[in-house]
Length: 297
Image (cartoon, rainbow, N blue to C red; front, side, top):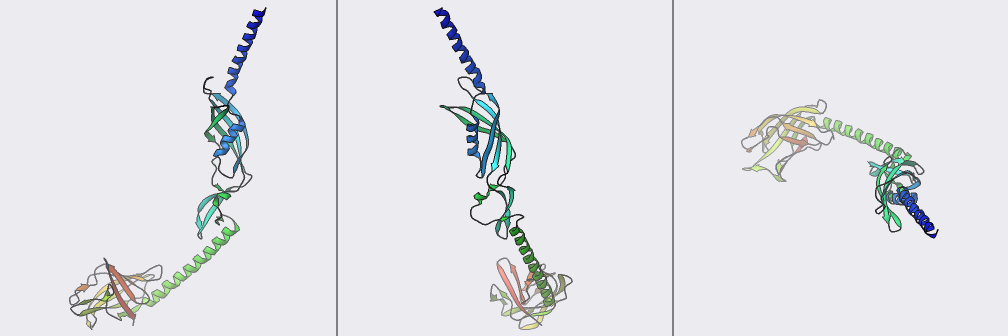
């Protein structure tokens, strides 16, 4: 009887071991362990509200257990979240993408392996909508504008008013320059090159312009280069001009070459000058800067 009793006891022990081995297929990290592992991966302003294991698969052996687990997770926004959206009036512009108290739900797939008396949990993938933006606390103390807010609308209105004012000023400048340019101009001093008076064998150069009234922002006329001390010793060519949209200057183009033999220079085909309301006509050839100071006649 003692022998039989021992056999029954041994069989019972073996049965327990077998059940333990079989039940190990449903083991692995607990919901708390999975929640802790996921919490480490979350951005500031987010916390796990609830987690529930839905399914677990054994990927290992009794000697080397390894489990893949699918858990349903609900995550709560503990702060308002914003997404950067450029700048407005020099301030960062953000769009609100979530409010504190909002939730997002989905699944998390984890792998767990023994680590001493505990479990090591790895996040394999997340299966829920992407969380956009950052918590408001992550923007620091720098001010920012929230799209759609009262401050945002006030800033947009202020900028619109400033743009309208700038556009009105631009239109005024264009009109003033257009009126100012029409007519005759003549050099008030000799032509300079890089700040020094241009001379060839003691002869200096001057310019005369006759500008027809502009049609819109463009016009035509003539330009004359002459010996400054002998105004009748000259060479004339056709020109066209276009008023810049800024209203600061007009670009003058000499349409054909007109070489002045005594001055050993020409006004040049396609050469462009800039003329402003003060009568400064300038151009650059390579590193050289030429200036003809004109006055209205």
